[in-house]
Image (tube, rainbow, N blue to C red; front, side):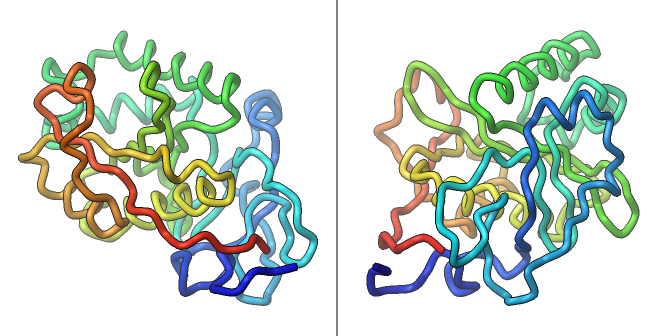
Length: 237
């Protein structure tokens, strides 16, 4: 029986940018070499937001979010095939100013991508490549990363300089947050941001993150951890 309150499938609780989509396993996307165009899926046409095969009215847990979409973006697992795209993204100093103090080298980016692939294989979620649907261009990465041994999940977002200030980070991050809520993972979500990274701080606040000054400095260092504010529990689709 549905409990009282707003459904997580309601546009009042989940960004109206989101559209339902059908999930695939991460391995199928890597081995099949699917094009970005293949990520586009028909919606259910009813305006409700449900993820990855969890069709409204049928219940069940959502599958791993190998690929899903927002109104302007297609998201798929970030993989080693994206090395050139990611290296180009990281070549802009203003984009990586708070990402890596040395500036990511090509070898560093290779290791990072290998880690992202392992994370997807291990946890069934991770970093997504962001594809701007209107142009088919790779414009950044957004996703979730488990942070051991603190048992938290960090939301990460990096957007190309010429696509910033368009709401893309918030749009893609909201999709991941909605998925995390469906999975019961929202209480573990954090972002860790340098206090001078004003754009990232604005995005975090807009998404509902609040400073958590009790967070372990062994990981956060000179950055400030923010935790997702809790919302009232509601029934699934």
